[in-house]
Image (cartoon, rainbow, N blue to C red):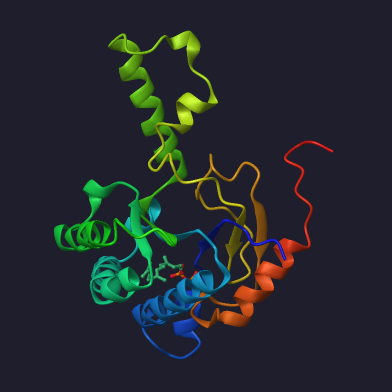
Length: 232
Ligand code: FPP
């Protein structure tokens, strides 16, 4: 079976999962963090090389402050308490997004996990925080303009690879498969540049319920597709 090299997840439905149990939203996010552990294990088991997770978007800052604060704390706690196990299993943690937006404690925890797992190479776990696809492309455009203004590049030479090399993590290959949970069928500003040829899968299951069987089913669905990249 053909295994996608890179799977990206839009982890949606934590709030609905909590509401359906009469719990506060943050309990849904905590259960979502357990689903992250399961998905990392499944990716390792199948030999997936890159796993990207949409943990917090640039738009998510407009949520109630208590939820934002709790999510930031959860993210920091998640990486700190899992970093040893991740390193042992060969998982390299990387972060992408507008780092300067993050509370200092969260940024420190993420930076420590990136540093401690830097030598790992079995699976790259890319966590998107304060991430927006349009922001990422706009920042790349700004860098191009600065390079052109400083005479480092010729503006007439700007092509796709010039843009791609100025995205947040230019060495990470484009996702082969994007999975969104909870039944919503939108990209929501996720990896807009990188998803040009990605296969999309929308599943009804809420993120905290996403399990190994759902992961296996996603792989089977992917393997059944024929990818043509605009060719025949
Ligand atoms: C979307 O569900 C989910 C989020 C905005 C947060 C995702 C974060 C986690 C799963 C926490 C752990 C992450 C990592 C990487 C450790 P929603 O709140 O929009 O759900 P709803 O649409 O049902 O309200």
